[in-house]
Image (cartoon, rainbow, N blue to C red; front, side):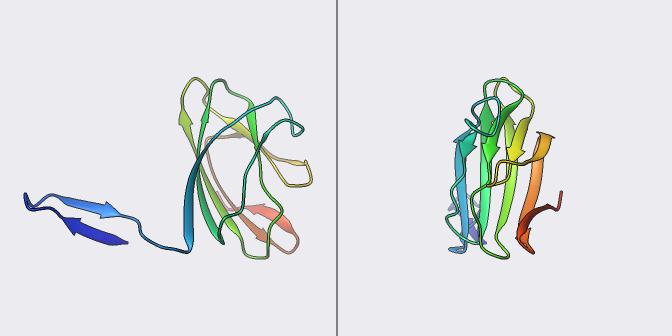
Length: 111
């Protein structure tokens, strides 16, 4: 984390960690076959999800042991999304905020 103070004295916190990736995606589809596929960019991924209606989906990628995804749903017409594992299994049917770590060969929810 980097704290920046501008000449007016206003503090702004800027998250600067090369090990963390922050992305925005739009949830799509009605099941795992057409859900928005997430991409693993780093070991820690923060995903901001928008959706036009509740029940749209996102799909976690194939992962390495210890990978972490923190998911935040920004309400833009829908209030929750479905989350699917890389094998297509539904891991959450109504997420608004979720944390998943890949451990022991599968996605584990830490919300």
